[in-house]
Image (cartoon, helix red, strand yellow):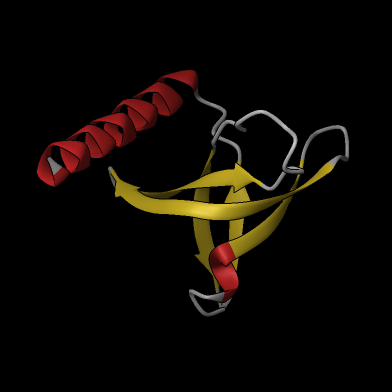
Length: 92
């Protein structure tokens, strides 16, 4: 799958609801790859929240899975927030 094909994905929650998302960013942290996904909502909706998932490759296919461990989720969120903060400082 090319990087261009990774721009949009569909994820299914535990209740079977499918959400189409744009891949906002992919980061590597502590030996794993994580993706931030931006749900594609109708234009009248409030600003959607990013979804954070682990991303992994099997063969030529990419898969996304929920981060079950709360400590891991918090560490990845903090890492990503610090990356965004550093990017903002560079732009100023």
